[in-house]
Image (cartoon, rainbow, N blue to C red; front, side):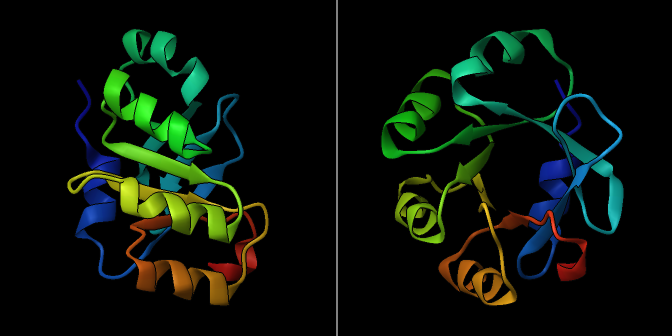
Length: 134
């Protein structure tokens, strides 16, 4: 089991949390901006099952559509979900995320307006690759 520090840092934050991708890791590692010790590893849903059983780190499962989201929830029941795609695709998936799960948005391109819209929609965190947005 993990200590849940990543999820706790997101859920305890006020407003939307900004997540950065660690550049010094081989795997895609996320850290909560302002708390670099709060980390999680992202796995794609298709690869998630094997990794989930073999790791001690907190995992965020990336899904790209409703079918993957439904399967991930049924098979893995992850606490952290990375909703990947366009802004519209992420907003379409958000209502299907059950209460108690943390939704992290991952968009190919991101603006300050997108972050504000995601926050208004109820997204818990957003992955920020452009350091100027932090």
